[in-house]
Image (tube, rainbow, N blue to C red):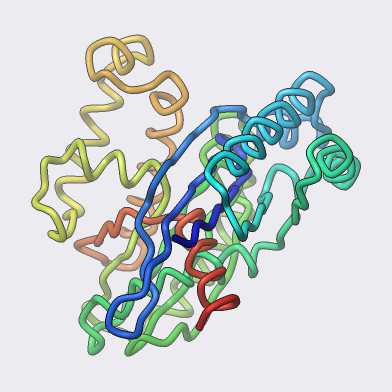
Length: 293
C-alpha cells in the first residue's frame, strides 16, 4: 500500500493529511486515512507584525516534528509540505523553513498565490460538474482568497487576493484590495450568463455541513445569507457553546461567509457547489500526478 502525506501550513491552521493510494481501472485513487488539524493561527503574527513570534515558530516546529513522527509510523513514501499566506508575508519565513529542516528534516516550501491556486485546482473538481457551465472557483483561506474562472472545464483566468478571514478579523484587509478584487471579478465574469460558484476551504465545508443540504446539492445564496444572519445573531461565546463550533472556527466563519456572499452578489451567482476538498487534497492529487501518472 502506497501512502502519501500532505502538509498545509495555513494562516489559521496547520494540517496533515495521510492518504492511501491505490489503482482502480488503470487510474490512481486516494482514500483519506488520517487528517490532523492544529489551530496555530500564524496569520495573527504575520499580518499584524510581518514577523512570526518565537513562541509560534516553536509551536510550528513541534507540530512539524509530530507530523514527521506520524509519517514515519504510517510509512509514508512521498510528501509535500506547503506554507501559504502567513509564511509568505512573515519576514522570518525563510528562517523558519531552515529551522524546520534542521529540527525535523522536513522540506517546507513557501508557495506563491498562483501555485497555491494550481494546487487547489489539482483536485479537478470541474470534471465532476456540468462542462457547459461557467464557474467561479473561490477558495477562502485565513490570509488570501484564490479565484479562478472555469469555462468548459478550463481555467480562463486566475488570481490570488490578500483578503482572508484572519486578515479581516485583524483589520488588515485593505479597501483597495477589495476594490481590486471587485474589478477583476466583474471584468472576468461579465461575458458569462448563469455563472455558478465552487467553494473550497474549511469554512465553506463547515457551512455546508451546518446547512443540512443534501450531499452534492449546491448551497443557495438565500440559504448562505440566512446562515450568515443566524451566525451574526449569536455572540462568539454562543457560537461555541450553543452552535457547537470549535473556538478557532467560531470567529473566522463569519468573515468567510462575508467573502463568499460578497463575491456571489458581485457576480449574480445564485448557488455554490461545495466539493469538500482543499489544499491538502490538492497536494495529494499533485503528488499522484507527479509520481505515478
